[in-house]
Length: 283
Image (cartoon, rainbow, N blue to C red; front, top):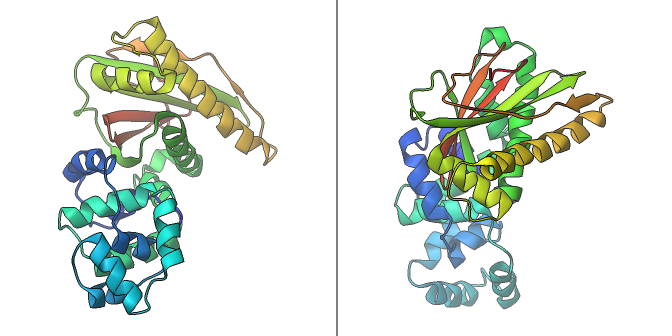
């Protein structure tokens, strides 16, 4: 199966709690999916078939599964040669932590693939802020694109939770925003404490940035600019024209924009706030 924002689906469905996300996402970065999970994730074996083979090492499982005609040698080779997806790595952590079994995973994989809208969009729309109205559809689309950019440029999976306040943000925070104007008016910004802000800057720039200086701020601004440029291209395919304004930055501010939505984004290196509004919220 392809990636379906599996961790996000599990949070939306109540399988996971918010306080479990950071530890699990961190563990998933080093997780190596075992043969049974790969077979389940790729639709080669069912949970019932995995249970019939029994537990043991990966090698023992592979031998018994082949003896019973449930796996072929070529399937085993192909499974392990393929790059394990983020969803499979996260699922392996859940198995290792005994939070789920193969039967629950099989059901969750199936439901995640069938989820409509996708779990990230569903999480954004769950905020149900009446004042945002029709802009919420674009907010969900934006966060979906933002998550794909996080994976592409910062090599991290992510999970989002609507945030009603900024209680989780430390007093010393750094923010960068950029406004899109035209057929769609949207301002998007990142707010993070020093540690997370620096890690984001390092991951995007591939530079050893140790202080929140001009290079760090410019790195986050460039990430937003590239991300928003890709989003603008998607909009242009629907004959919607937008212009990107110059990014802004600030320290220790509380955003105050029209139709504002704050979202807590969890990643394997920590959490930050993604702010969306219809006008600039950093002053």
